[in-house]
Length: 404
Image 1 (cartoon, rainbow, N blue to C red):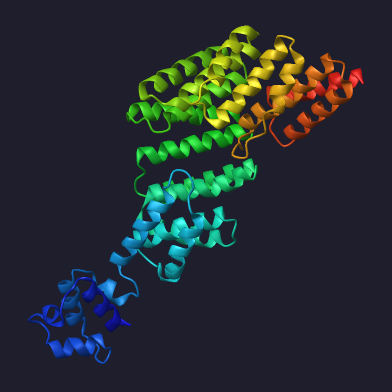
Image 2 (image 1 turned 30 degrees about the horizontal axis):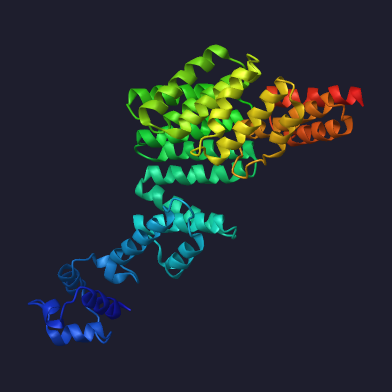
């Protein structure tokens, strides 16, 4: 009740009844108000709020903005933990206040974090809280946070490999944001561009994806922001490699290398060299040269887990090219498809190993094993858009079927 909230805030600020009453109220009247035996006028309420250094709304609501800020500060620290985010702890922290989160940035951000925590814990109802947060961000014109909810909603479908649905959600919500928000900061625009580009690529809409990607790169240069620039360069290099656009590949590889060295960004350097290796194997058939690069990296303890797996797959492909079939199979078998990989192009890098494994078994005269591996490769590619990797898997299966 109102009196309870006034008393609570007064005690938090270590103020006596006399100190709060000041010259505008008597100690007796203030005591009656705090014990809910008297109702203050709006003038008295404004006076009390001023003395407590809070907003009148903080007294009228069941929870003050100051209290919400303290809760949000705790929530942000938990949510931004680098290794393992304690989503259950976040739910426990926010749950008691959930129905009191009705207005203001603190409320909307807590609802946002709560929705994401529910989703991560695979609990139902996250959509309702994401909607509430989005509506509040819209009313306050908090464009960056509103855009992140749009991206989050789209990526939920992306992770489920519903790529077209993900794109539809992102484009629809982006349109709504651009129509209803006064201003969009450059980083938010680039973030939306990047995600829109990867989703267009995911459904095989390569021309539109390329246009969005190039627009984002040009916009980044114009505004001198480096946010997402390494991701965009990786996206461009991967796309060029996939479709053997050698001139474009060289351009993006050079930019990716320059960024990696300038920013001392290890993932960019690892991806740059991985794409170089892929080009040496797939385009130039320089297997020994590729193998030398791969071995130098696999001996390096700073390798990131996902990138290390891809280097091992490339080692298997290089060994196949060098006709070391049994050893190649051992490298393909040592890798499992990453559970955090969802883009069709990235999945293709994992799935193509089955086709190469099948070709190794074929060369060893193990036709039954070759057929099983080739069939698994085609099965994995079934729901993905047409790419040279998918075509390679289909062609491999047809070749082995003719041998059986």
